[in-house]
Image (tube, rainbow, N blue to C red; front, side, top):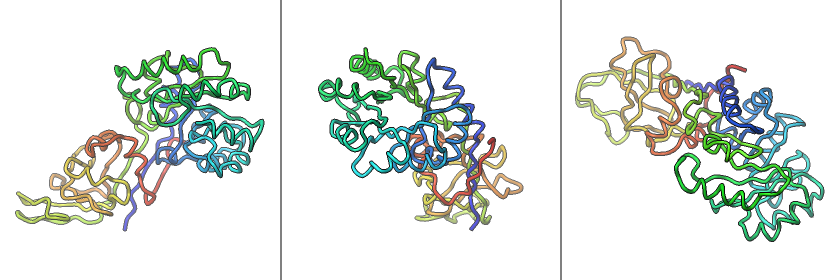
Amino acid sequence: MATATLTIDLAALRSNWRALNEMTGCETAAVVKANAYGLGAAPVAKALAQEGVRRFFVAVASEGAALRDALGPGPEICVFSGHMEGDTALIRDNALVPMLNSIDQMLRHVEALPGTRFGIQLDSGMNRLGMEPAEWSALRDLALAQKPVLVMSHLACADEPDHPMNAHQLRMFREMTDGIEAPRSLAATGGILLGRDYHFDVTRPGIGLYGGLPFVDALPVAALDLPVVQVRPVAVGESVGYGNSWVARVPGRIATVSAGYADGILRAIGPKASLWAGETRCKVVGRVSMDLITVDVTALKDVPDTLELLGRHQSVDTLADWAGTIGYEILTSLGGRYDRRYSGA
């Protein structure tokens, strides 16, 4: 079966980083966890390093080890999950910087790797990762004596600028960190857009680099073109796909394209989704299946070899709206069968 092509525009990626960096008066890092949100951590991080990024964030130590292999020595690689049991060798051998989330992690790190670099993650109200105020109060002097390279927290509602949680977490973070010498970080993409009160010493954009909301001015980075496998006529009353969920009311033509939910195209998009042939919108009909999608191409005189799902006409957030989810899930769900190609290197 023909292979769908996922094109990643590294020039657009770098442009998005520059645009976010220009909004700040501090260091701008980059989040490349989950294989750079599905787009390929090695080529993405290399492109950003060439642009000037010197600090990267990943979710777990194994991601950090793979990223170190790609980047070599030099750039700092921070691990959000901290120093988990079993991570010591990965952290040591790859010069990773765990963002310690608890007293237990602090003890593990200091005992296993004394004198090595680390950061601290604080819980300013999200109740997910990080030390809560009471825990931090008990550990603060000991932790700061070990010279953390960064103290950070994470905003829960930064994509909603008027949400009162933003101001609450900003106040909590300041109360927990004012007066410390270590660099501080609170803002990811949404936090950057909230303004400089949220920027502190380091910002760490993620989704905005890859063309997603809430950064509305982001250039699209991912384009996905699906090959047409077959075109067939349908008569009035004929159904298409599983469950007879779509029935032709007029004579038409249906194209079957090679991709489906096994490739991360969420089944839920089916009733609302379209693909594009040039400037012509072609409605998805029937259900998205594991490997195939069926599309109404009746309006086309000539059916092209591929139809566009992501790109100039619709973004990851368009697909997310169709599925009732967020652009993050669309990107990180993109499967391994795509022919990934990189442009703008």
